[in-house]
Image (cartoon, rainbow, N blue to C red):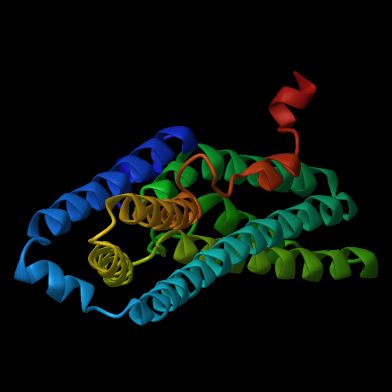
Amino acid sequence: MSDWLHNLPVGGMALIVFGVTYLVAAVIYVAVMALAVGERARSFKAISPGMLPPLGIVFGLFVAFTAAQVWNDTDRANAAVNREASALRAVVVLAANLPEEPKEHLRNLIHRYIEETTTQEWPMMARGAATLKATPSSLAEALQLTLALALTSQGQQIAQREITSALENALDARRQRIIISQTEVNYVKWSCLFVQAVCALLAIAAVHSDNRLAATIAMGVFATGVAASVLLIAAHDRPFMGVISVGPAPLLQVMPEAEASRTG
């Protein structure tokens, strides 16, 4: 599916998906009814109605398998964002045990990281352009700062270890988030889904070629089901793109107040 379709509101996406599906069904109906004359009409009627249930079942299986991937990707995306937010929140909480200067520096780095992630990296993920080539400078600096601290009290040393672990956890969650942002239903799955739908519509039109009203009703009902299935999958196909997408709200909720704004 193209990016422009995913970026449409759900209503606009539904209008296009249902419109195209009904158009394809109408073309199939007109073509079959035009061919169903004379000897060909008897040939069409010789097609057994018993083939319709298997075609419908196979289409349903295609939808189920494709939807399972989409739901799994969405769940993984939400889990990665929540884990990243939890890890960053843990850093902010544990930083309270550090001396004043490194504590405020660490808070500012976390603030900068979340700000850059939500304003720069999120749009890149929506386009599928985010990569793992570069490590965020703010998180890398926060990790270096934490490891460089020479602490004497046992409580501060424990906090240092936990902060290091939380930063590593945040980096791992970010990697998972970016990997998931590049996933989508590939063209082979979409193609098989569409071909199976067309085959079922052709079979319905052929079986009911002697009764145009029955063919219209049956094809309309099946086309509606096809369109609803395609819309449901397409609306969730890209976890970080479109109106129904995984947003940065958990990260924004744990963003610490920057020192400059807090004291100003």
